[in-house]
Length: 332
Image (cartoon, one colour):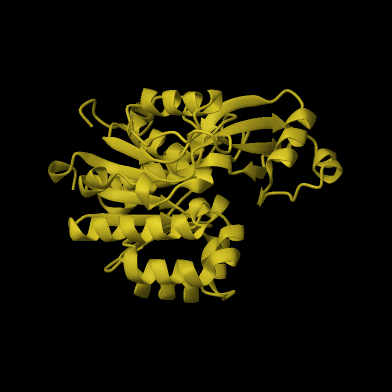
């Protein structure tokens, strides 16, 4: 794939700045935050939580943007589409993403909501509980798509978190149609159980009609197919798309395509610090492998390795040399 495309992977998602703070479980109770989940909030709630957060750090995030940063760190050519506001946080997000080497040309929003931010409370067990103000990012629509970039991307990777407003749904479908017409592949991450429960029928329509590559964790996949049996869920997803990668926390992951299914062990970590971005970076490793037409076990191992790196520190962007971690040659 990489030989015929300008970009190995183009990401499409919510452009968000992460605000991360270590907290005790009591803080979640005090602030009425649902543990280990993502809750959408308004600007007033975002301001109140920000003020309540102790010793917070700020770093550019957004699920698909994290994945793109990881893929770029592995040596692939990347691009991104997502909406920021013409404000300080928007400038920070744009600078940080471009610094990874990714192309990012979406026009900032003027005279509208502020750049999105996700307030992430990390408890001592490394679980992250997210309160997200979508702001400008939620106003992404068809007009914000970089059609030429999609045509020139081997894989267009779409983030389920963005899939909320009708305008974003239309953008997903249009992006998938552009990619298909150009002979390219499409990928989707279900992102969160909240997203699946909220958009199950729309996700199923998208997966069955427009998606080649699906990423999910076990709970999301079970919810998508409304079953409690993992084997049944795997059988269903195998019918619906060409490739799927399903993470199972400490059990590792399962990768399936039309001909094969492999189980990949989770990479051991000395100490889990923060699980923010684990799924995003797992997807980065797998997508990098797919962009190089590598075997399923290698794709899965890359995913496990970079996911292990991300959960060993705070924040959802890599700190280490991912190419060295995965033993990838300097020329990628």
